[in-house]
Amino acid sequence: MTISSTNFSDQANLPPTTERPNFTPTSPYAKRQFSEASDTVQQLIFDEDLIQKYNRSGPRYTSYPTALEFQAIEAGIEADILTSRDPNTPLSLYFHIPFCRHLCYYCACNKIITKKNSDAGDYLEYLFAEIRQKRALLTPPKSKQQSNQVSGKKPLVQQIHLGGGTPTFFTDAELVALWEFLQSQFEFDLPSEQGGRGDYSIEIDPREIRETTLETLRKLGFNRVSFGVQDLDNKVQIAVNRVQSEQLIQGVMDEARRLKFNSINIDLIYGLPHQTPATFAHTVSRIIKMSPDRLSIFNYAHLPSRFKAQRQIKDEDLPSAAEKLTMFSNTIKALSDAGYQYIGIDHFAKPDDELAIAQREGKLHRNFQGYTILGDCDLLGFGVSAISQINSTLYAGKGNNASHILQNDVSLEHYKAAINGGRLPAVKHIKTSIQDRLRAYVIMNLLCHDYIDFKDVNRQFGIDAITYFIDDIAQLGEMQKDKLIDMDAAGIRILPKGRLLARNVAMVFDSYLASKSKDRFSKVI
Image (cartoon, rainbow, N blue to C red):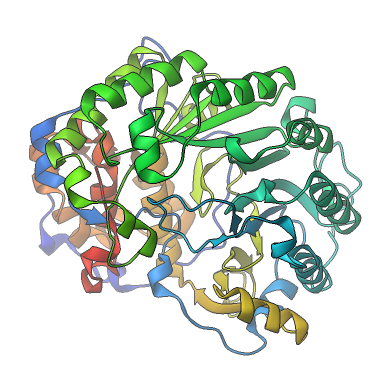
């Protein structure tokens, strides 16, 4: 599609006017990335020349605007946002547990390394205090019934995720205490396997899990679990200080399956010291035999000047860029041959996993927790550095919602001081504009569904998308020539050669990107 800049009308200078976009059962984004012959045949082409050409640094878009746009929060704003949120919008709760027993040298996170549970002190009590603070500001639901399984008397929670750090640093008793306290403050939807929409997950370090922990978590209601594996090669494990045997991983997998967790995810990293295409292919092959429901395959970014832990890794031990590309190519082929569906940005899932089904049905979303089936929830974060993403009427025009992104203090000492002082702990804030929400809608649909439907955008935001985005669309000409995308009057489609480069397409619509240093982001591959 060729569009001349002379077609740009005055309408493109007008702000879009919209309420929060509706998420409807029928979607123009359903099944866009699959062949007509089969709903689960994956259309994905690894083209090394094109990947080399377009492989540049860019955001991972767990939000738009990204976290780089955070500003210092004004006093009282967090309370106003919580008070003015739509009480009938379900909640997704995130808990950040910053403690680990071991320092993994590839780590790029702000974690606290300690050997004893007692060293975590009273962190759980601080979480309880923060929960009380925020819960007191939430208005009870106005509707009589939010689903067939709940009464609607308390705010409805449909998703919980415990991350970190190592959430199972908490003892079984502490995990039970947290869960029971949450149930006193909120109403939980039934898990998906019982007919509800409940998605309750936790990250686990297989090395630091007690014999009773998985069973305790399953009895509480957790139905999804994620294991950090990274690599099964012993030499690699020693180099990154994360030694765990294949037998240990298999044993935890077997126990999770025995307990009937709905979905099991495994994380792997390519580009670690001493990895070769052959050794990493062997790891991937062994992991495929374990048959996790989901896989996250991350590209290791070596930035020792920014992350102290990475200074333990020697530059000369790292694989070359060409070797990393081969590892990624081999992994794509192995997972595709094994029947895994490429979700996007490092993520794969079995065709019968809820994530894969949501993508095929055009209902997939992306937020600070990554890809999710519950994008219509407000995200409420608890703990040091936790991020919240909330829609409210605060600062919004009549009939509109405003989206707010907030982050708690990243310093444990400062976080505790805020709670002790009776203050809400958010220290950073982004208030999105209507233009931000329009661009977020485009970017997230490109990353989740490889497609943006112009009629859908027009309907959701009251604009003519082609004229509004005329300058952005003009930048896509080279990608269209290279057959990464196809454009016409209906929309923009990411083609099989472009699926691994979807972030490049999304970056075209990012109005903040030009002013940001590229070394703040990870490379696409």
